[in-house]
Each structure stands twice: as C-alpha cells, then as structure tokens.
Length: 256
Ligand code: NAD
Image (cartoon, rainbow, N blue to C red; front, side, top):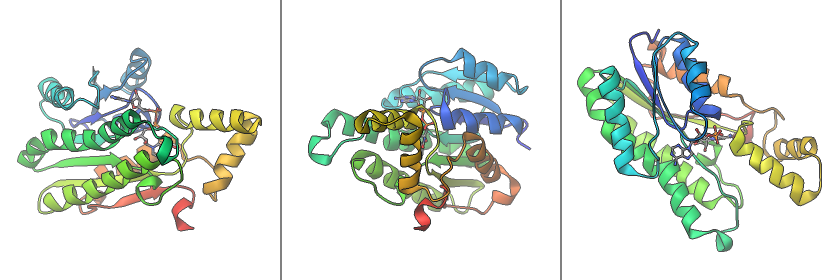
C-alpha cells in the first residue's frame, strides 16, 4: 500500500516509534529512523522487511538538527511523504519540585519538535498533493495525572497542534492526526514500573499490576504493533478524510 513512499519516524530506535516504523515498512514504505542508543539493531529489523532504511541522529531538542534531518530524508529519498512525530521523554515530580531544565527538555522534545518537523516537511507534502502527519501524543493529551505537569502540558499541546495542522491542510491531500496511547510497556514506562517497585518495596510484577490497575480498565498494555496498525490506517485510502482526531488506544483509560 505504501510502496514508493517514505516515512520519517522520530524517536524510532525504540518502543512505539520502532513499532510504527516496522508497520509502515511492512506496507512497503522506505523508512528514515531517528533516535539515540543502538541504531544497528533497529536498522536491521526494519531492513529485514525488504525496504530501504536510512538514519539521522538529530536531537529533537534542537530545531536546526530537526531541519537537517528532514532535508537529509528528502535528499536520500526525494520526499518525506509520512512524518511521524514520536520522540518523547518523561519526568515524574510534583510541580514545586519539578526541575526547570526537565520542564524545558520535555516541552522541547515532546512538543516543539513536532512543530519544527511539521513546519519543515509540510511544504513538500502540500506541493505533492499527498502527505500524512501522525503525532504520537498520549492519553495525557486528553486527561491529566499527578506529577506529570510538563508531559501533560506538552501532550495537550501536541493535540492542539494536530488540530491546527489538520485545519490548515483541510483542503489538501495532507492529513494530520494524533495517536493517544495508554500504557505501553516500553523503556519509558519500564522506568516508571521500576520506580514504583522501589518506592513501595514490591516486586516488579506487583508494580506492573498496580500501574495498570490505577488507570487502565483492560489491565493490559497496548502494544507498539497495535499502534503501528493505527498509523497504517491513517495512511490508507480510508484515512483520506480523517483529519484532526486524537485517537486513543488505551484500554478504556479516558472512557472513565
Ligand atoms: P522509548 O523511550 O522506548 O522511545 C523514545 C524514543 O525517543 C527513543 O528512540 C529515544 O532514543 C528517542 N529520543 C528521546 N529523546 C530524544 C531526542 N532528544 N532526540 C531524538 N530522539 C530522542 O519511549 P516510548 O514509550 O516508545 O515513547 C514514544 C512516544 O510515545 C513518546 O512521545 C511518548 O510520550 C509516547 N507515549 C508513550 C506511552 C507509553 O506508555 N510508553 C504512552 C503514551 C504515549
């Protein structure tokens, strides 16, 4: 379905971003990976799906590097057809204890990076008459939780940015939508499970049950594979007129 198209997925060396990159690759899209840590492993996993893979190591807190990443993808593959703004970090603390530098980093990486990548990639999508911008927000783009002021503010911002992008492209072949996962067991969440186990002096399995039980009625994690299939749907012909939605995949979290 996506043969000949190119997808740039930020924060795709791990977790949800890698899951989305692989789902798009299974549909034939060439992939540009981004993110820190091991690159060779994720690169090989995507290449094994039979598509061309490239990588750019831009730091999503740096606007000039984000622009260079988009230009790199355009130079390598001719165009970015699908932009997935996924990179994100978390920090958990009460507002009065929240380190200012963590606030700034979360707003830059989780919110401003989506604006910068969209700003740079959008003109070529509009000129081509087709494009997909998928912003990975969170249930925390729809509801709040204690101790996550920066993350919740950033993710609500991402949902707002998604709506404006969708409106500004409404008469074009470019769509913009947000994905709002509940708990997904990635390194980002594993850190929160580990911290809970230490804080409460309980096992990892018990901490996992507690974490799910507090928020997610299904008591199940959403998987990167499931989120990848939602991204594929947004890129499918059936998604042509899906614009500006914030689609939660959250085991019932925000239905409460
Ligand atoms: P993860 O830690 O597994 O992956 C994060 C990715 O972002 C990694 O590839 C990492 O290298 C990259 N990254 C971090 N800082 C970066 C920077 N400055 N520049 C470039 N890349 C950077 O986390 P994940 O759970 O897969 O999270 C992916 C997205 O999904 C995030 O936006 C997160 O907020 C969102 N999300 C996650 C969950 C969850 O339960 N895991 C739920 C809702 C939303």
